[in-house]
Amino acid sequence: MRKEKIVVLSGAGMSAESGISTFRDANGLWEQHDIMEVASIEGWRKNPSLVLNFYNQRRQQLKTVEPNLAHYALVELEKKYEVHIVTQNVDDLHERAGSSSIVHLHGELRKVRSSEYEHLIYHWEDDLNQGDLCEKGTQLRPHIVWFGEMVPKITEGARLVGDCDHLIIIGTSMQVYPAAGLVDYAPSRAPIYYVDPKPSLDTRHYPEVKIIAEKATTGVRKLVDQLLA
Image (cartoon, helix red, strand yellow):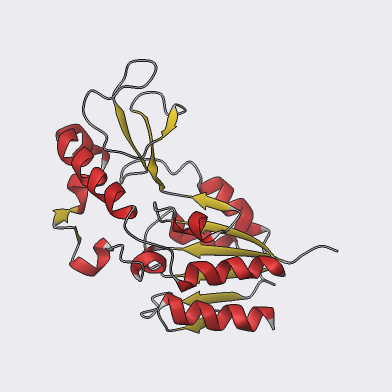
C-alpha cells in the first residue's frame, strides 16, 4: 500500500532552539559579520581568509549542538508516511536525528568542495585553510551556496514538493528565493501547514495554509501528533 508523501521545508527556525543562531534575528548580521562579507561569492573573492574562518567557527559550533525535539518529531512521521525534508539549513541536525531523506538546498557545513570543479566534494570535519587543495590542485571552499550563486538542488526540491500529499513549512520566513518559491509547486489538493512563531506567509495568496504560530519544538510536536492520530 502506498504511503502518503509528506515534504517538509525547513529553515533557520528549525535549528534555532538547538543553539544555532540565525542572521535574520540580528539585523542582517550573522555572528557580528555583515552577511554579504561571509555569505556571498563577492565576499569570498574579496577576503577568502575571513570567509574560511567564519565557516570554520560554524563547523566547530556544530559539534557542540544537538538535534532538538522538533527534529526528532519529524522522524516519527516516517512510521506512517514517506517523508522528504528539503532544508535551507547547512547543519546536519536532521541527519543526526534520524530522518532518512534530506535535500540541502544551500549546502552542508561538514562538506567542502573545489573552488573550480564543483563536482569535487569532500567530507570535512576540521578547519579549512588557505592552501588546502582539491585533487586537481585548486583551493577548497565551503560547500555552501552563497548569495549570487545558483541553487543546484532547487530542481529536486521542486520535484518533491510537486508530488507531495502534505506540505509542512517550519521556521523559515519564506522570503529568500528561490527556496521561497517552492510552496507554489504544491499540488492544490495538498494541505499546507506553516509552523513559525512569526509566520510571514501572505495568507491572501495562500488562504488554505494552516498556520501554527509557535516555535518549532512545540508547534511541530502538535502537528506530528495530529498527523499520526
